[in-house]
Amino acid sequence: MNALSIRNLRKTYNNGFEALKGINLNVEEGDFFALLGPNGAGKSTAIGIISSLVNESSGSVSIFGHDLKTDRARAKSCLGLVPQEVNFNQFDTVKSIVINQAGYYGLPRKLALQRTEYCLKQMDLWDKRDTVSRRLSGGMKRRVMIARAMVHAPKLLILDEPTAGVDIEIRRAMWKMMETVNQQGTTIILTTHYLEEAESLCRNIAIIDQGLIVENSDMASLLARLHVDHFVLDLAEPLGQVPVLAGYQIEGVTDKVLNVAVPKEMGLNQLFSQLSALNIKVISLKNKSNRLEQLFMDLVESKPAGTE
Amino acid sequence: MNYSIALKTLIIKEVFRFIRIWPQTLLPPAITTALYFLIFGKLIGDRIGTINGASYMDYIVPGIILMSVISHSYANVVSSFYSTKFQRNIEELLVAPVPNWVILGGYVSGGIIRGLLVGLVVALISLLFADIAVKNMLVTLSIVLLTATVFALAGFINAVLAESFDDISIIPNFVLTPLSYLGGVFYSVEMLPDIWQTVSRGNPILYMINAFRYGLIGVTDVNIQLAYLITGGFIGVLTLFSLFLLHKGIGIKN
Image (cartoon, rainbow over all chains, first blue to last red; front, side, top):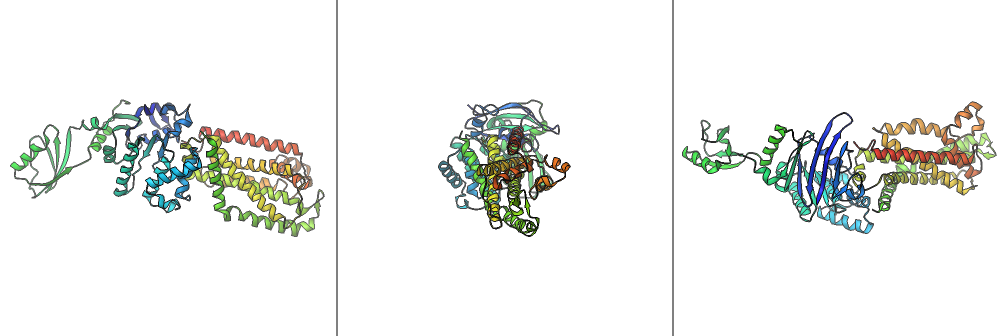
């Protein structure tokens, strides 16, 4: 079953800006799905429509088979949203934010208390339950929003840039939490600007640009399309000039650092053989950029005309 | 889906909100109205004598109570809902399976409860200055409840349409307060020249204040049935308009 099904979704704002130009998308139950795109591409509009914060101009959205127009309450019950920006009342306590949300979803008081305790403990916030939320750190506020989104045990959780602006330690803890939630059976749709995050967490991906979906496939086959990897080599000795190696494009960053484009058919062995022949010693190497980032830039910059 | 839980949650949240800030919400009307009773009712009122057979103090008590109910039921909803919009926590309700009538019912109930609580506080203060025995309990309670509902609904519409904090103060300052003062709080419309009597009878607050005055002390300038009809009519129209705004997402959705 599809956790999310979008058909020919269009949105034109009052100022005439066409944010979505008829997108189609399916997300399967249990998936960990990445929805990526540059700023202003239409991601937030799509998420806004799915979560009933934005009115669509035309098209349809169904969540676990429940149409958002005709079966609104059931569709909404399946959904939890972690928005990009803090949107809870900063004068409320952590516990009241989460427990009120449980009430809006119709959870009886006893169950709401149990679920609130469970979610706050999962987010490591139980000790902060009576703290007024404006006194929390940025990372804690994001975790409050995740606990709030999960309190009614949604089958589909949308996380809109959940790790933006949080430090690496919290980000990694949040990745672990998202993986656990997904393993427990919750379908997750993630939008993020950290493509490393999407690459390591998500199984399927859609890239949206200028209101169109320009790519929609599984992560493995998308990454397999990369023909060239870029590496940064740190050298033991400084070089007078950039060496010329057959089959490789090389660019000098400093006299001891080289950028090398490695075609997949050539591989790294030949590269090292040629470097050894020139008596160039390499201390270390690393990927110049995240692989998905490279593909993302290729896709967004080429701006294909197709919708799917 | 059990919507009663969502409604109850919203009402409790709204009531806790204004109780938590009681020095801003419940205390000021007590002080202001005590001054009204002292200055207008006691010091000036003693020189005025009676109006329609009631002492001036007794005559102004119902108007001052209802004026407090009107301004506080309105202020509660307009400030609470606009803040909810401004801080974007309205999204908590829009994402959840909460129907529009629950959102409206929750906020309006909060406004009504605050209006009635303030009315009770002012009524208790008035007992220090006047000795009022309620003439008709049913009219008194029903009119105060209906009036609080009208202005809680009006506050909701103001909040939905407001785009800045200025927009939520324009109506209370430039419409509500003048209409309340000109609605016969401190005088009988029969004291006005004919032309101004006619103009005054176009003010809906006049009917609410007089119906409430009738319930409390048995004195009125208007027909009570007409007062119920006008108040009920406003509730119907404002409810439908509020639900229309929510349905279209005007002011709260893109």
